Length: 114
Length: 112
Image 1 (tube, helix red, strand yellow):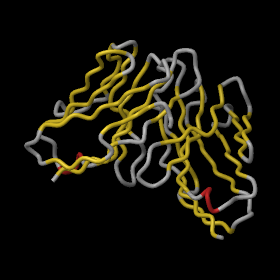
Image 2: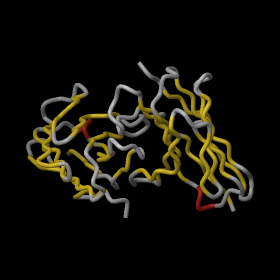
Image 3: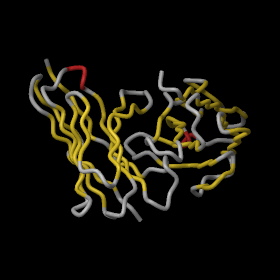
Image 4: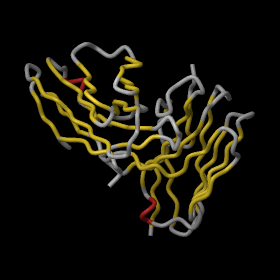
């Protein structure tokens, strides 16, 4: 069974620092990996989707890398801002599953202080 | 606006009540999902529907009853719930063409 782990569980950084969030998974045979952001009590907002054939995706200040062989993905957020404070979740799907059937990590709670 | 709308946003119900959660997606997706998010726990997949057919029930108690009348609408009917069922219930949709999953804002359910 696929297991997804996110380290650290919580992270606090001063504004302007770069954020590095880690996600690891036990089964490298994934279909895709998706990073989400969740604000308290709210739903999930998709940030980046990486297909299994890709090694990275970028959107603005966000960059996500994928190394299937080692079972790892890293989300980089450059020049953090207080508005980046949220919980970040990574999720993986398997090739035999439907496309939204994800296994989620527990998330990394990020606080960016002014 | 994510394209996936859930109602109500908040719900308080007694253990003997019957209520329903509604999810609607405007993205033309063919698959819809119910996830449960409890405090301090990862999201748990509950049900999967693909082209209106249920393709997965992740050992969910029968007090939760899903319904998918068409590819755009998904319901979760609730009856005789327990306090431990209090959680954030999230609906998601996706397409067989790819693009990942899109989530609604969730329904915060409190069982008293």
